[in-house]
Image (cartoon, rainbow, N blue to C red; front, side):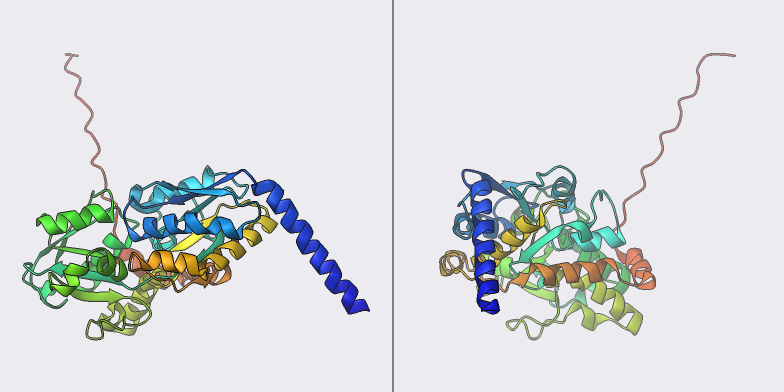
Length: 350
């Protein structure tokens, strides 16, 4: 009798919470901010989620996507931490290098990733550094002997971080050219011959440019992740290039964000019950056959993580030992110091 009463009470409470959520979200719009430009994998997945997640939220709110590229993904992250609505109507997907950027660089950071409400992650693929077939290199060891021009966006993105680390720790000779607005812009530059290499998601390269792989237009030099991609068994992991235990620990820290895949968050301050609802809706969307069928058309798939799993990876990154962080800082991209303008001499005679 007592158990029956408790079960009935739990159902009643859940029903009441669902009704409250429906009252809040009915007729409202949830904005999904993406820290990347249009056309990339982050954007494609965000738009697919916007088409399906409404079915899993009481009140069936409308979902739209807002691209907010800039500052190596820092612009959107700062926006979500400081400006975005904290009522559950604003969520975001940000680059997985953002937590690492906070602990080893801090450039432009006005956020603390530990305080975000992490909803989960779609998972992801290994990051790779690849070179165009005319670059004259076949392995990462070749880049230790020959300069290769690599295109990049901003300092907080893995598209710049990993090549920089390899230059400073392992002795590669990537000449990194930054300033491209998005990874898609780097792809265009690579095909035009403006640059010879790029770093980024292997899944994205494979799905968006299948001819790069099938026609052997590119060669994959190195991959970053917890384990080798099953289609790249002969391509070394970044951590395998370490020459001693200290380097291995540093490279493990720098590689950790790839485990995050493509994470989703809500700002700090969103009511706990609404965060719980959004987490459940995100998880349900990841296993929704209509959603998985939708992204399959783009050659994509998901290997989702829960909000708790994402939060743990973020916390482990931020709380790395001081000695490992210090060494990582030495090899991460650094901001160039601006030259101080010399004061104009007073031309008036004394």
